[in-house]
Image (cartoon, rainbow, N blue to C red; front, side, top):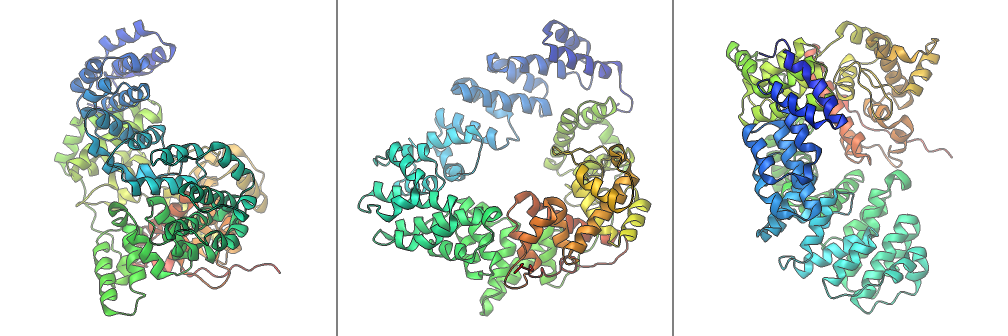
Length: 629
């Protein structure tokens, strides 16, 4: 039972030291002495992982068969497949594929390469996103894209679309290879010359051949990247005298780059106009999202509908895009469109995440906290016998590195979710909550499907301090809790990669500023103290809310990205609905952060007895930014 760590558990650290030192002989001894322990598979995992690429498929499969559906068997198998693909050894990787059940993006692309190389060319149809991605993606995905170039399943239209996106992104080498697969010859020297001075090229660019058109799109992309204003004013002239699809590719290049460089260039209505003008040319998934967000920003509702229509089937079905499809559809005057919008809202209103809560209000439903279900005695008993959760609890008890603890916990949760075992998830969440292990308790409680317990899902540790300091700072404690849940999951020792610390993840420079404003001497060690962290965090949140029109959405964005950025993203021409502001935030991290914090605050408000205050009341209209003369 996981309640008290056994002697073998304590050997985990010794075995890990042996693994790090490369002492295989000692590791083999630990493999024997720990073989009957709940953590007993780690020494063998470290042995196999030490020279992973030299292992036989049989050795990996043997481990996976002896520890079926386990976290480390999954990791070992997935890593093995990736390493073998890097070597081009698809034959060794093939038999191990069956043991990879929860592949991330890099692993999925590696698996797809193996499937294609071992006789399954139809796999390419599943990976059109990879084929058209120009943003950074794992090397295994780039390799899959290159592999797809030689497939007869990729049509001339598929190749043309890939060529346009690569030229738009300035990916010269990849574009040359794609063009070659279309029997079009592009010169690297010419592309380099264009990159050095795109404006000069555009003034006198020839427009007769497919290669000329490719150079033209490349030049427009390079110009938009370095000088968006000039690109916006030059693109119509550049589009004269070329086929319609090439015109659209030119408009797409300027529109897309304008939409992805908001941090540098701010929001520009011309960007949406040119994305509109590019409609008719297929959208890649990344292009469709940028089009949708830019259209949302400028209330171009027909553009929103066109952008969503241009998305892949899976992309279009996501809650966020269904919500925006409904928002855009209801702006149309006809009753059919309004009926479609209401049907979408009703469907979305079943959930309780950000877009679900917004949808509820459109159909007149209030967000309600469901009755909390406690795990049964049977659930608690099953938890004590569950090998996956036992591994996680044991690792936690002996102070193992979080990477091991969280991997085992997350894997255990996944197994319970696959079995739709809400009782086991609630038992795990309760036990973790009782241990003040709030981040993992939330992770488990968040994933129940029928039986819920919001006291575990939305934990409220330090309640007296949170309410006291929130009210002292003049802010809503539900908002403070919502922010804390997103920042640290109530881990007082949490440290971010940029040095933010504690419950409210305060940056050292921010803490110094707050201490000065509060008339205190700054002490970095004090930030790990919940009382100090909460005082400083709520005070700072109040500070930036005052700087940002007393608007909670702006202040939430400002807490994550800095108040100056939040202010820069405010509209300049007229006030903007808060959901539109939030969806058009150019930083993915901040965009998701605001959604999560405001959703959390809505649920915390109900738990704190504030009634069913809807999400929209927490997200007031975003006022215009005051532009200095």
